[in-house]
Length: 426
Image (tube, rainbow, N blue to C red):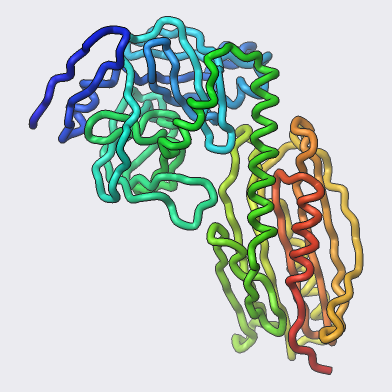
């Protein structure tokens, strides 16, 4: 094991790590004093509501963490406070200074700073390089996890770094480090089985550029949060609307394939060659399940759309219609939300005639619910149902969350226009 000792030029300058750690133990010993547990405390009970991690990036005591670690305080400061726990077990108050809800980042400040802090990397990683993740999993104590950087995630709208290593609950907001001990990203999520994700350093640097150093009231931070949600959904929906949506065949219908590189589709079918099945079903399910975290009960930003084709030679029209109805009833919004977060869905029903070459009528139901705390944003839930000849049916459905009403209606119109029957028989 080789250790190159660090040199402190002055307390007012960054503690420059010349350490080239070849194992996690060396790295941990060198920098663990710059990493903190971050707790959200419920005021009435005085008990911990959530736990995460954070790390110091300057001598003033500025810490980086995830937005979801401090979200309860950001949204309900009258009910919560945030505090840190250092390596000696000492606690202290934190102030929320800046946030990026879209990229799940936040800056918090404490007033008894360590004079040592983590430096940000200035060179990009190559795929396959060793990286280290640090944090406090499950409140068990500060740990370091070694793994491999495997590039940015494919088919993703939001940049995420793929880490072949285990991030566990409680490590959110901790640093991802290169072998020199410099920050290359921020722990954010895990999919289990050694599949974990970092927010890239570039997103953190963008947040630091926006950070003015001023103490902002929580009301101003809330306004910034809403502005970020609005700007993000505009970019997101405009990307969808401007894309050339490909056609995909499903039964005798033309439906929508993968709208963009960040939407993925999967198909399935069941046919009545099995005597237990009385009708054929073919389906396509597409989604982008990259949610933006607002609270433990409320997420936004998801998109899902799906199609089902049903036909039969064994059922009479009445029997087929009953089976068809059972498939329609499964439509639901993609995102979680409670009644304190959103209004009830308000629905409008209409009948839409297809193009002249496919003279069928679709019964469409569009439901919209409003966000109570984020005015002007809505969840959309659409179902289109078409039955022809008493033995063939198409069901189309989409759900999209956290969009402005006009953009949601434009998406709905384009969706309806891109779904049609291609073959009909008498």
